[in-house]
Amino acid sequence: MSDLKKEAASMHKAASGLRGVGQHAAKPLQQFEAQIHDLGALGALGSLLGAKGEIEQGMTTLAKLTRQLGEEWDAEAKLIGEVSDAFDLLDVLIAAAAQGEKG
Image (tube, rainbow, N blue to C red; front, side):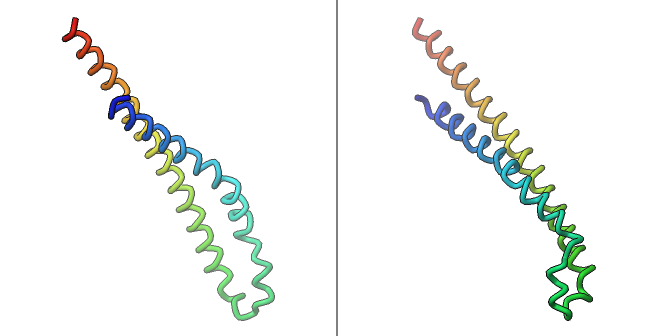
């Protein structure tokens, strides 16, 4: 197996793993977002009740950043996959050129 083929396989595996992160994070993110306006646990902590709005805003910001991070990971996975495909093609072209020189 050529070095390019090994790199392509490694990159393909990395891209697949990166794509999976978003799938694993989807449900926890939905659960987190559902709790943004339900901060009943803070009721027992009277001193924090005044900070409820700030906590909700912070949680909303965290959820937004997490979604953006997921989008970024998807874009990175796509790019890595495209580079992997290019390496595969280059490997085939190099092998064909080597066969052409022999024949």
